[in-house]
Amino acid sequence: MIALVDYGAGNLTSVRKALTALGADFIVPSTPDECRNARGVIVPGVGHFGATARLDAPWRDAIGGVAASGTPLFGICVGMQWLFEGSDEAPDTVGLGAIAGRVARLAGDGEQRLKVPHVGWNSLEFRGRARLLQGLTSGAQVYFTHSYAAPVTAECVAATTHANTFSSVVERGNIFGVQFHPEKSGDAGLTILGNFLEVCA
Amino acid sequence: MLAKRIIACMDVRDGQVVKGVQFQQLRHAGDPAELARRYNVEGIDEVVVLDITATLESRQALARTINAVAREIFLPLTVGGGIRSEDDAAAAIEAGADKVSLNTAALRQPDLITTLARRYGSQAVIVAIDAKRRDGGFAVFVRSGTTDAARDAVAWAKEAESRGAGEILLTSMDRDGTKAGFDCEMTAAVSDAVDIPVIASGGAGSVDHFADVFTRGHADAALAASIFHYAESSVSELKRYLRTHGVAVRL
Image (cartoon, rainbow over all chains, first blue to last red; front, side, top):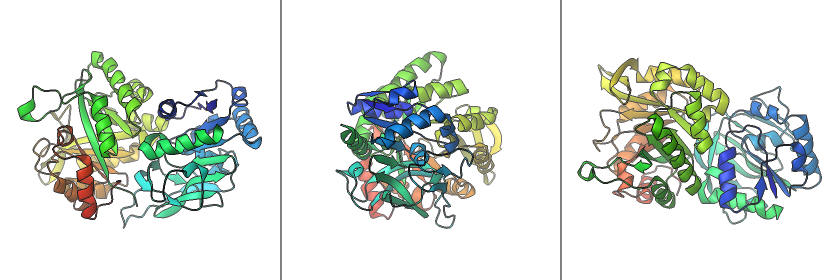
């Protein structure tokens, strides 16, 4: 059973539908304790980093605890940003800190018409092997919608460039994250979600 | 490289897609979920569902339609048509929409843009602008194009951005339904004035119209309806054409 964490993130319905389509056994826990028995935890997200403030102490402790015990943890978009230490978008909101580094605003490039927010389909440039990316090839296109992004760190297994190059997929041990929306990225996205379910199986 | 997006729009009434070409007016264009499934296979990048009746009764039908489409395809889904309040937007998003498109309501109560952007994020809020050329500028109209809003499209787009809109859906009333091509000058004027993506709409009739609006029109995305419904031009053919003409697309 997978725990899909509801902290008011706007894409909960979409992630739920995608998991249902994949035949996943999942719950939306109403208390942090319900995460403790899960085989995997998904933190969705879209919009503002400040929304993760609702993942306050009991939730942070429960999710951090299961991740520390080896349970796979998957952050999507703002949920992935939350895996880092924090974001310039909401400096007072502290991230989980499972991955070192800070999320910063994309610069864009007016001359090249690279706008921010970065909205649309962009490609994943693979950087090494990743369980999350099984069945896909470098250059696969996925749907992004964000203005802030995580730096390229040792955990980066795929990067994307939109004026800046940023981490679009991170993976280290049982910690996984994607900056894009696998629940909105057609077949490529479903493959990635399915890979996470495989990791949890 | 960020791909230019191709968006299919479905005008929906009583749970059916209705926008057709003139000589097929009596025929429904089909079931929304079925059409969405076909578009997905063909490689559409996004889908917009527009409730063209937007009556109280149509609200429930719309929620069922959104739900059915969102179950079929795992692509960004925008819902528009008669979204007048935070509750209307919440209902659409709960049913499975990723973004809502505001038109008349955004001009009447611009605070709604900000309210929704705060609640769902800017990426969930599209401001739709219907405009036509007038006196060297672009005049905005509301209430399905029937009422002069006494605003200029470029100025209004900038204001919408500053209030929290995440994208602009710009429809040329001069070109809508004509299949004479997008209004590239108007699209470029708005796209150059804002930092958020601009979706061009109105006038798509052939594959080269799309190439035009992405190059001369500086559009980030292009939207069309009947050209896709009746498979006059399949999405995959369109995208192959665009790629050979130097436009980055998702294939």
